[in-house]
Amino acid sequence: MFNALSKWNIGGATLASGWAGKSIIIILFIISVIAIAIFIYKIKEFRKISIRNDKFLLAFHKKVSLNEFYKLNAEFDCPLSRIFDSAYRPITSMSQEVNKNIKETMSFSAMEHSLVKEKQKIESLLVFLATTVVISPFLGLLGTVWGILDAFMDIKTFGSAHINVVAPGMAEALVTTVAGLCVAIPAVVFYNYLLSRANKFLDELEVFEKELINEIRLSL
Image: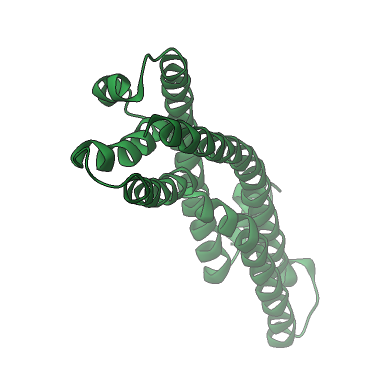
């Protein structure tokens, strides 16, 4: 175990650390892999949403009427198209004799429900990154405290503060701190970037909701 410290690097420090330090490092490694996977997945998802939303808005603003556009809406398959579908479907399912206020109420209620669902989809998995940002430094701190505790226990056991006695505990303390920061720092970048993209989409949804409300009122 002491030989692992002959070459001072992350690998040697990890090998020299105890079971607690190694366990924390493994947990942090798993968390980092999941965080990277989420980041890649959300990047691809947001790119797809952006392209499809732009195509939808371009077609929507060129429409002749809401009724005609409703027949073409299914081909877009994006958050905006699903909100439009949920809002206009109740209108198409009602007869002409139904009161305008009832149509508006049913339409706007369905649209609001759809808007909430789309927001949840866009923000999905971001909570894991936020949790990673918070928990990773604390896991590193746990390893730090545990390693220092091990070092003091070894001093008591061997009756010496020689470097070979305290090195494993100090290695455990330092390597878990480094690992925690190495996971937390990229997670902060991932989270902030994805959150800014998500907020852009959420603003877009709310603007479209207001626009659609006005268009539906004018068309009824």
